[in-house]
Figure 1 (cartoon, rainbow, N blue to C red):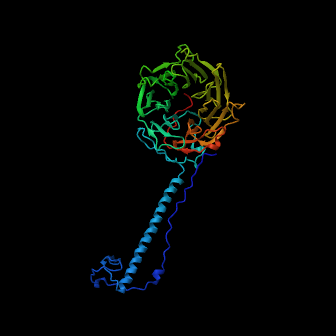
Figure 2: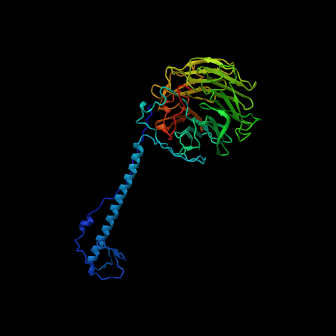
Figure 3: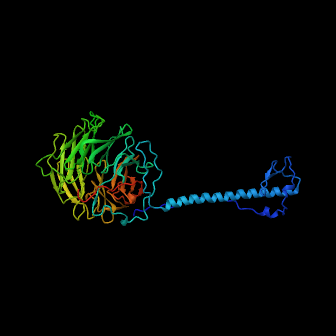
Length: 530
C-alpha cells in the first residue's frame, strides 16, 4: 500500500429556506401613499399594534387609526415589508454560514501536506489533552523525489521513546528539532497531546531516553551538547529537573542507554549510558537515582572500558550497542561495537567476576555505524548494515547458555540506507526488524519466529511509507493486546507514525495507517564515516 491517505469532507447540511409566497401580495390593492405632513398626532392606543410603528419611507414614528382604511392598508404593507426583510436576512445569513464552513473544510482537506510549523510551548508537564484525530500525513504528492536525505549514507535513529510511568499504555517520544532543541510529545500511539514541547538548551545529538522505574514515574533523557558533553534531564516527582552536565562523560556521537532492575532486597534500579568519547574510547556511566538526585554523586561513575594500552581495540569505530541484564548489584552487560576498521567485535561483563572479557572479533564484512543490539533470556542478537557497495542487512546471534555465535548472516538482497529498529516479543519467540530501503526510500519489514523452521520469513515486505530517517519500533501495553507503534521522519521533517494491535501474523503491510504527528525535526546523525 502506498503511503497515501485522503479524507473526503463531510457534506454540511444547509438550512432549508421557506419558499416565498407572493399570493397575498397579489391580492393587495394599490394604496396611495399617505401625506405624513397632514397627519395629526394620535395618542390613542390602536387595535392594530397598540403602539407606534416605524414608517419605512420617512423614518418618522406615527400612530395608525384602525377605523381608517388607508391606515389599515398601510399597516398590512409595512408588516409584509418587515417579514420580507427578515426572510431575506435569514437566507443571506444561512448562505454566509454554509459558505464559511465549506471554505474551511475545503482548505483543511484539500491541503494534503501537513503544516511544518511546530507549536512551541514550555516544558511544564501538565496533563495533556489528547487530540481526537491527527492531521493526515503528506500523501498525494509523496514520491521518491521528495525523499533521499539518507541516499549514499546510512541514517541513524533520530527518535527515542519510553513508557510514561503510571500509565504503561502511554509514551513519550523525544527528538531533536531543527532549532537544535530537544522536543517531546506524549501520546498513546493512537492519539497525541496537542503539541510538541521543548526543553531549553541546544544540542548536537539526538536524544536517548530510558524509563528507569515505572512505579515512581522516573525517566531520564540524555543528549550531547555543543561542547561534546553528555547532559541528563530527569523526570522525577512529576516534573523535569532541567539539564545537568555529567562530569567526565563526553561523546563523539550518540548515546546508548539501558537499565538494570532492582532485586527484591535492593530496590535500587539503575540507568547505564554507553558512549565513545572524542578519542573513540568506550565510556560506561552508571547511576542509581534512588540513592541520590545528583548524577555526579558517589552513586554515579564514569568507567573506561577499553583501557588496555596495548590493545588494538583500544579505540572503536562506532558507539557501542549494549544490553543490560540482571540486577543493579549483579549485572550482566553485553556490548557489540565496530573496530576502527569497522569490523564486528564483542565484549561482556559478568556480575560474578566484575571483570570485562577481552574483545572478540566476530568476522564478516565492514559495517556502517551504529550497531543495534537486543536480547532475550536465552540469546543476544545484533543487526547492522554492511559497508561498501553491498549495504545489506546482517544478523548475528550469541547464545547465553554456551557462548556460541551464529553468523553474521546476510538477510536477503535488499540494500538499505538506515540502521534497523528491532522489536523483541516479551517471551523472546519473535523478532521484528524494520529499516529504510535505499532503492525507493521506503520502510521494509521482516520477521523471525522461533516456531518457524526457517527462522526468518521469506523476504522483506513494504510498509507503504517513504521516510528520511531510521524508523523506530516501540511496544506499549494495551487492554487486551500490546500495541505496536512505528515512527519515521516524513515529509517536511514531520514525525509520521502508525500503530496497531500486536498480531500473530508475520505480515504488517495490511495494518498500516500512516498519519502525521507534526513537528519540525532534524535528520541529524547521517553518516558515511564515523
